[in-house]
Image 1 (cartoon, rainbow, N blue to C red):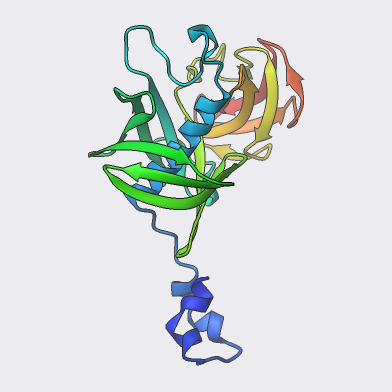
Image 2 (cartoon, rainbow, N blue to C red):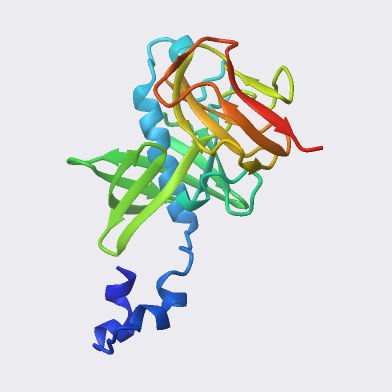
Length: 245
């Protein structure tokens, strides 16, 4: 799309080195707006709410707290930065709280707070309303990536919930264990890769929620004991980790 919209391409100023000459503009990092982050967060929250067993508060995974606002924290970034730690500059953290109406959320992104709601339309179409401004788009989740398509182009953002469980607590810094029975969804780094404290290493699904296992310290992953699709039991050692000296 960037190629088709480039002024040189539109003016048919083409030769075999066109892409090489315009590499800086054609492949510049994508800049996301606050509305992009808010829309992606809302789409993920809506899907999470749809998966909840809402008849019982014990079966809900959408941030329910007795006598308190529902709050969920989400990390969003370009899919190319999916392995970045939650405090990395490439990652934007969105805090979502249930508003007075059950269909509305209050989303906090940095210093901005937006009242947000989502209305499903036909097929994959949705209407996202942010502070009263309505935005219609085609949207779906492809694994951990929220895909949003509009006439102006397609936006993809990696979506990760970071508050579902305290992943900073592990028995030791050399092993990470499963917090509960579940299934491994994805391995996010290669064995031997050097990682920083807090960087996502593995995703597992348990009780209809995805849990991101993060590095307990700077170091490297020595071995994964499970692969994507494997079932794990609570307390099972998921991987061996070597902290930096």
